[in-house]
Image 1 (cartoon, chains in turn cyan, yellow):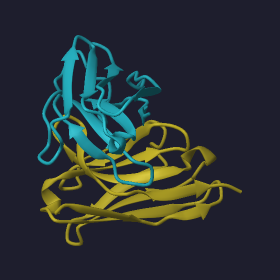
Image 2 (image 1 turned 45 degrees about the horizontal axis):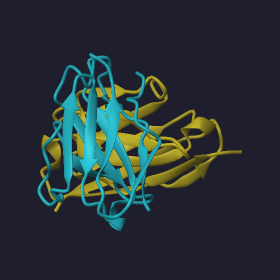
Image 3 (image 1 turned 180 degrees about the horizontal axis):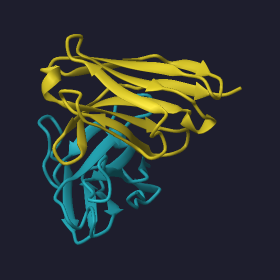
Image 4 (image 1 turned 90 degrees about the horizontal axis):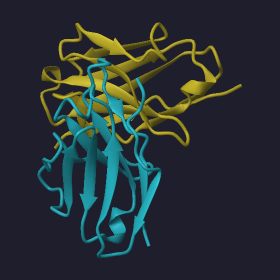
Length: 111
Length: 118
């Protein structure tokens, strides 16, 4: 199962908005509303920021939002803060595997 | 509060074996599927294995099938990963994660490092 495609890196200045894309296929992102986004600081436990395309778990800032169009899902972070600097991974339900599929990860740098 | 705590970090020679454990608390362990996810150095996340709440159903990535065995002891709220015939490419941080609907994980542990090297 091929990984979902994410940009290797994105950057933005404090206060700006950035968007991270996650491109899959009609067997995963395009077919199901089970896209999740995880924030991962090195050495720490990954944290769910968005699930089922656009839902935020309790306690996650509303600066984080998710959407999907066709085979591409997106994570948008508005009002960038220094603490947002981390790695972000998308994942999706897939009909091609019983396990699921992750994106390759995107390193967010806050300038 | 949901907590997942992995243990078993070690340096192992190629061909060797290792068992990882994950102690769970803060939820009814037996009612949730559980999973292992790994991250090799410089790479992204990879699903390794999933086990149903009862332990009766298991799934594995092709890369570990036949070498790794996932299991759980619901009386001890503990998840395991028995890793045999380890390869250099199995070197990674291994995360325990609670599995929920949609092939996703909602809670993760902090991970434990497995290094396979001679």
